[in-house]
Image (cartoon, rainbow, N blue to C red):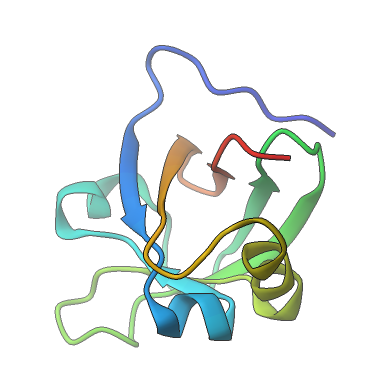
Length: 106
């Protein structure tokens, strides 16, 4: 399954901090909070242009301000570590409240 971004997809830049890199999750910023689904919803995560899609989970209780944390688990962590470095900037395309494309690398 390949999810495509378009000109209307909101995009934000994620800095791949050490915690994200080592743990397989990332936080959505306040400015993009409104585009993401509800607590505990399943979210599809397309990994770059590889076509690989993971099922993740939205957590709106991890951050005190209620902004979502996206959990992708060990598969997301392993993908981050296979092509990115700590401190890299990754574009996150918000395709729907429960569907993201992470980066453009394979």
